[in-house]
Length: 356
Image 1 (cartoon, rainbow, N blue to C red):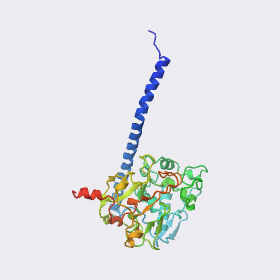
Image 2 (cartoon, helix red, strand yellow; image 1 turned 135 degrees about the vertical axis):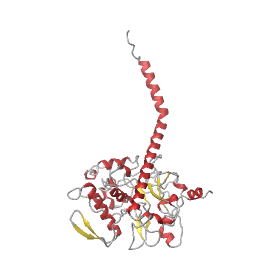
Image 3 (cartoon, rainbow, N blue to C red; image 1 turned 135 degrees about the horizontal axis):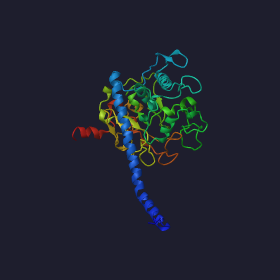
């Protein structure tokens, strides 16, 4: 029997039908993909919370943070000499260098992990202490939001910073477009080489600094830097028992809600980034439902002014929802909680728990 093929009209009809179905399913598939990524990101934070609890059991209830301290001597692997740390900030940067040198074997030569002297390590790199505790996999996808394509790519090629044409933040110099953070201290290689070992998730400042007294506090012109209101800061000594309302207090959070259109910065009221609470639970409530932020410098003086500032992106990071140069004031919410670890980020959690 002679086999009959498709006519041109039939083929076109099939293609039109397939295209129509694809057009109808496209938004649903995209939404489903975003939801799956969100679940995966929540799973990452849940695992981090479990490991953080194990770390606390082995380290006298300490919230994971850098343990090297100012005034103490530590061995520098690249020269075999000991050095006394001038303060806790230098000690943390040297500990980052030590962890990464041991994990990567990059102790000498052109690719040596250098001392990141220009940056406060606690906000973006505290997770390296957990990575070291877990066995040293500093580029585990666990540290990356599954929708954070940039970080996942940087993890695959930690030496990309050596290439003239690279995709790392400030890897090709300061951006020409106005509206980006233009601090020159993003440019040195000892900072650029760290991006592959970063995390999509940030630790709230009070997890590594005191609630009152000499502290780091936010500054108005950029959300990426903090300022010290004293000379001798004691960092990295917080403990889980200091958290008063563990189910209502954020420990770590996605800096960007990449599952939403525009990848909004966490401080936009409608953003729902995954948040690890101090009791190990995961919170995806809108940021706007959280209590307002207050700068530590304000409540140290007895004031309780709401802290707001604009979001200024780093090179290669998601843009403000209004585009570069958007001056919208954003409430920093759970990054800066009134009262620190004794404060509350999501009051409605406590209300539900009390039966009200």
